[in-house]
Image 1: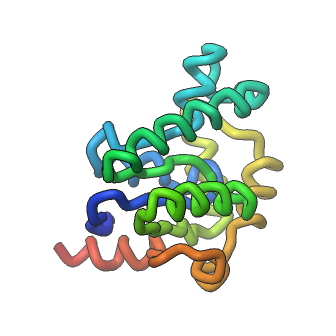
Image 2: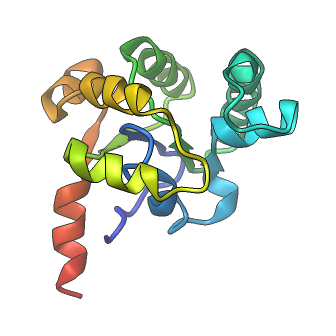
Length: 163
């Protein structure tokens, strides 16, 4: 999968359920660009899965997001970003800093997501995966929300396959 080139200051939200390939995709960029709620939950509680730490993790995410955007640095938001209100908050921060936005939408079939999730070290409960898969927006929805560009992971995979 060939990742898109991101101009300076770009906020790139990865959007998709657990197990769809977001973290693998994010690893193609420099580690300093990556902002990941799982890592901040881990730092706060010794468990990436401890959802009670999400409010603290979001505070850390937002501090780092603002710090990077104030310096016109690129950001890869490696979380599900499945909920519209979460994306709205990210878009509002990008607007505040007058930074470009893009989303990579992981349009991965549920059966593939379930198989990939089952093979992970930290398996997310199946009902959560299904629920977040159902919440995954369309490209049209993401553009209507205000993302400047939206890339489908399936198209990026096709582009990268020929290289």
